[in-house]
Amino acid sequence: MTPARLTGIHACVFDAYGTLFDVNSAAAQAKDALGEKWQPLADTWRAKQLQYTWLRGLMGRHADFWQVTEDALEFAMASHKIDDRALRERLMGLYLRLQAYPEVKDALTRLKAKGMKLAILSNGAPKMLASAAENSGIADLLDAVLSVEEVKVFKPHPSVYRLPGERFKLSPGEMCFLSSNAWDAHAAKACGFRVLWCNRFGQPPERIPEAPDGEIETLSVLPDLVGA
Image (cartoon, one colour):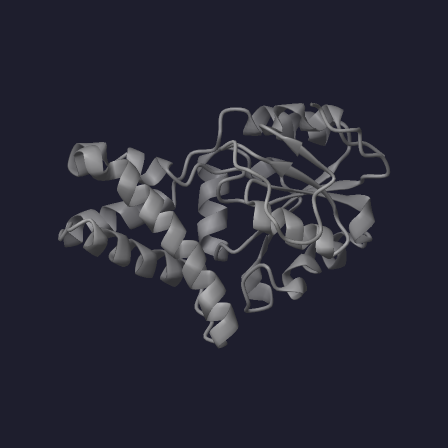
């Protein structure tokens, strides 16, 4: 079911990894070396990457997302019994050049044509986000690329979700937040955003507070669902 249109929206704020950029594309581009292990490795890498952000936040031991991503990759490679330093370096390099999902550029272009402010709000380190945005051809469409490095704590800490309002001088209710990570969508809703969960992977709803305003499968329908 297509969600109801959200009005009074002046900016769209996007999570980066899994929402705009395909986190599996790094391992997929190394299939020649990984063989049948590429998808299991990608899955473990992503799961451990997220787990480390939450654990570091709770422990008060922040490191930027580049370090977290490398630590998670080392764990994933050890888990799948892959001992290849050159391959590790190759995979980290590929993570800087993640591919955007097919509909992303067109959706952002259509939103921009409507006068919508566009931003990324991500755990990613600034250099990682800049590289991915440039590689995928969307850098010029973005009004802001906001990293948790401004507050030195990962999502879902509430201080992260205050950054777009500070940048655009808008209230959370005047912005639509998009994430494929349901926990991220719920956290943004708890901070006052209008929220659409981009459920790319057909996951069941989370059992945590603050449900999103609606659910979409891809960003292709977004320009028709938000407006001033």
